[in-house]
Length: 175
Image 1 (cartoon, one colour):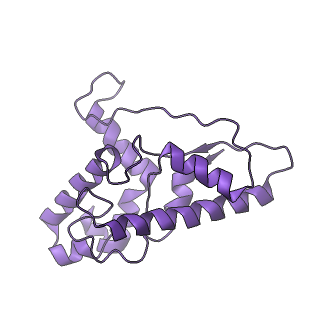
Image 2 (cartoon, one colour):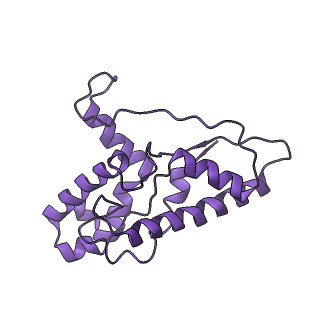
């Protein structure tokens, strides 16, 4: 079983993000070149990941991948970008805008369609089953065992490895 985010997050943010001013990820106001850079980087990284895993798995073997994705096809849609915009605004309160503009998260949240297409195009695996589920990102949702805001914060910390990434770029005092 592979938790794909931890593998892909070790990658670098894509090149060509100079115009993504005031953001640390794809945002509603990001220029098309930023969206294209992130999408292309994900396609390269995911294709490499699949190819390398195919060499490790025995013939007839199976692989389970978990990844945080998005519901909508538009990469700048709110369902995955809003949280990163909140983090960007918080960082902007602590940093100069030029410092914030020097940083972009090395992550990408693909849609179900993108994952399906990439697996088929890469060709090393047959896609037998692709399941999606929704987690509550509502910080006021009390229906989970833990408070909603705590759930969101923990998910961001664990799955995306945000704290070490920020500390490496801005220094440990930012945390």
